[in-house]
Length: 209
Image (tube, rainbow, N blue to C red; front, side):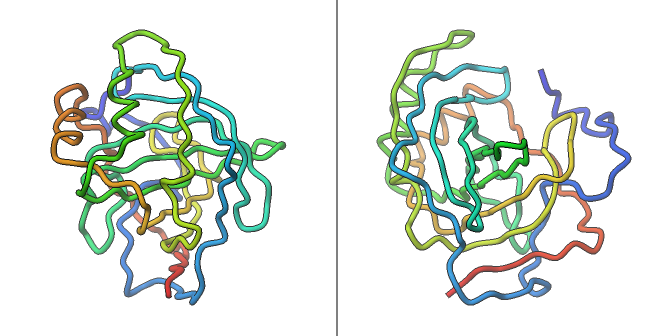
């Protein structure tokens, strides 16, 4: 199990790590929505507990910057791993995709406090520690057809911390989490956010209206 209290022991010799604090004053502004389209067939089929979060696997496809990607899994971080101008979100959902040749892209949903999301509640209700549970969820309604946010190159946020990972950080997802849902995550899992890493000269693109 990943020990978030011993992050200093997570060895890496690279310098393009994730997550990061996104300083909006130092971004390249692009006045259009993010080129991310999720198809209707994201079917999530099971969930399991790795000791730090729920991980849900399944099948699905997306177009990300006009390239085809395959869905691999999603998981949750509280509080958010990414910061925007130093501020966190109460929950961050990572949708992990890969191309046919193995290029990774993580689509991050910065989840705000709001009404309880029905699909998120289904995931909570079907959670059983140390068990794989057959389920079927459809998550396309979590994301707007016109998503805004950030794009940059980074890494996995857990060991082996592999770099070359493309990140799409969506700031206007349609999914929200209620106080009770956030309390459930805090009760069942220790805090699981990696510390923000140095930008080291990387460019961050900000897609906005």
